[in-house]
Image 1 (cartoon, rainbow, N blue to C red):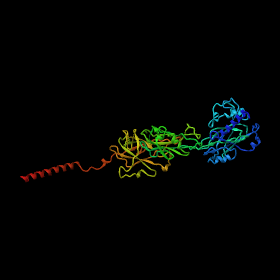
Image 2 (cartoon, one colour):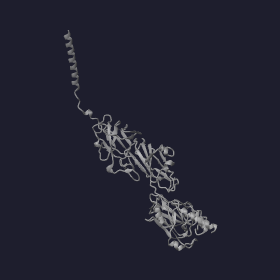
Image 3 (cartoon, rainbow, N blue to C red):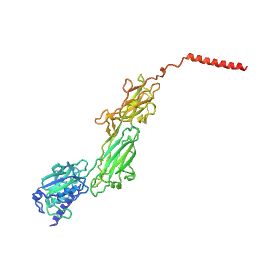
Image 4 (cartoon, one colour):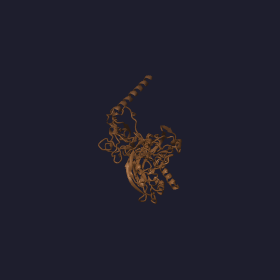
Length: 536
C-alpha cells in the first residue's frame, strides 16, 4: 500500500471516529444490509453503487457508547438510559464543494476524500441556519423529514456517494438541538478501536444525541402588596442540564433586572435545596442596586448534578412612585449554563414574563352645593372575597387594619381631601390579577373606603363605600383606570351632610337663666346679713 493510500485510510478512520463523538459529531455505524451486499466487500470503493443514510435520535444518554457496526448499537445506546425521540426534524444537504466554493468534494477519489476529511459542519451552518454568503452550488438540499415513534428517520436508501451535512431543524421540546454534523457515504467499515477495516459501509447510520434542557421559570408573589409594602417576592429557578459524560460543569448564572419602582431588600440563593452565601458567587455579591447577578463560582458550579435546581429569591419593597395608576414593567430572568459539550454558553434561556399591576381611587369631597370640602380623612380596608364592607366591626375605631396607599408622593394609611375636595390615592394592588394570574370574579377581594374624620361642620359618612380595581381592557395588555365612589347624584362626588347638632332644641330660655342668677345672689346676700345680725 502506498503512502497516499495509507493517509487516505487514516483520514477515513478519523472521520468515522469524529462521527462517534456524540453531540458535535454523532456516532455512525454500519449495517450489513442489501445495500452493503450489492455494493460488494472490496477494499476499493464501488463508484457505481448507491448508499443510504439513517438517523437514530436518542435523548439524554448517560454515556456516549461505542458503535459496534451492528444493529446492537441501538440497544447499546438504550442501555445508557437514553430514550428514543420522535418528531425531531432534520434537513440533509449534499456537500458538493468546500465552503469557499474552490474545491470539489468527491469521496470516491483519494484527493476528494482527503479534502472532505477537512470539512467542518461549522463552515456551512450556524446551528439550524445555513451560513450567509455560501457560493452557489456548494450545498444541495436532498431531504427533509422527522423521526418516527422508533426515533428513526431513513433519509434515503438511494443516495449518491458523497459527504452530507445533517442539520437538526426541529428539536424536541425540552431538549437542546444536536450540533450539525457531516456524514460520509460510504465510510470504511468496522475499523473502530483496534480493528482494521477491509471494506466499505454504504449503509450509514448516525446517532445524534440530545440533552434535556428544562426551561427556567419565574414567579411573583404580589398579592395584597401596595405602595410601601415590603414583601413583593420574585423567584427565578434554573435547572442544571445534563452534560456529556466526563464533561466538567464550570458555568451557572442567573441574572435579572428589577423595575426601578421597586427596591431590592434581600436576595437568597439555594443550590440543590441548600442555601449558599455570597462568598460562593464569582464577585462575592448577589445583587447591586436593582440588578441581580448570581454567578456560581467554579467550585459551586462543579457541585451541581443534572436536574439540580438553582433558586434565586428576590424580595423587594415598593417605592412611593405611584403618581398615577401604574404597573411594574413586564420582567424576565436569564439563565446561562454550559452547553452539553461543556463549552461556555453566552446565549441565555429566558424565563416567562411576570407582571404586576396597581391601580388607584379618585373622588371629590363636596357639600350639598357641590363645593369642595377640605380636611376630610379616610382609610381603606381590603376585604376578602365573600366578605362585605358592612361586616366591618363598628363597635370601635381600631377594629380594622388599613392598607397602604400613596397620596401626594407619600405612602400612608390615612388620606386627606385637598383644598378643592379632591382625594387621589394610588399604589393599590388590583383585585383581578394576583401572583401573575387572573383572578375569577367570585374569588376577587375588594376595598372599603371609611371616612375617619369629617370635614369641618359636616357629618361623617355612616357607611363604608365599596370599590374594586379591575381591568377596563385586556387587549393587548391589561389597562386599569382610577376607580371612583359616589354619594349623592353626581358621579365621582361624595356629599357630606351639614352637621345636625344645631338642629337640637336649646336646653332653656335666656330670661329664666338671668332671673335664676339674680335670685341666687339675693339669697346669698340675705344669708350674709342674717349671719352678721346674729353676731351683733
